[in-house]
Image 1: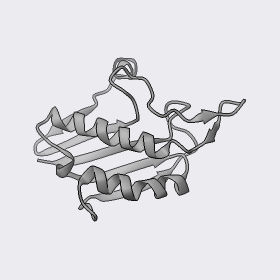
Image 2 (image 1 turned 90 degrees about the vertical axis):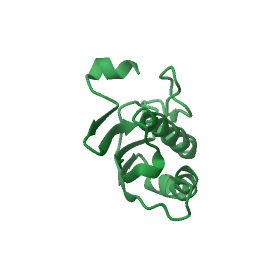
Image 3 (image 1 turned 60 degrees about the vertical axis):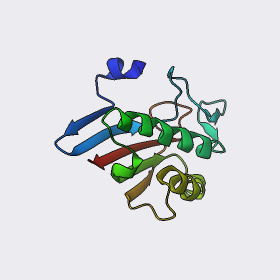
Amino acid sequence: MPWEDQYGYAQAVQVGDTIYVSGQLSHDDKGNMVGPAKLDASGRIADHANMEVQMRQTYANAKKILARFGASLADVVEEVLYVTDMETAFAAAGPVRKEAYGSQKPKVASTILVTPRLALPTQLIEIKFVAKV
């Protein structure tokens, strides 16, 4: 993604049997935001309705990153979700996480935190992952 070189970081690194995946967001293969949030006149998020769309894409992107290391979401042991609205995120997280991990009760330590803004103005969610292989 273009921001890797701009910011100077790796999407993921493996140290021994642990894979650390940098915060993933809802972008397509060209770096365009999938399900961008609507902004008000001042450039602030006006609507969190696309939280589920962004969350699904974020898990899909993490799956691709993990595959580069021969891993999958089944190897994830911890995740941290950074969201711009807790109520909307919490409503989406149950069904989306269960689908992403293929389990009604994923065996993944999970933390969810609210932040007023993420890296991109139309971004509603970012998720970082730790996987063991």
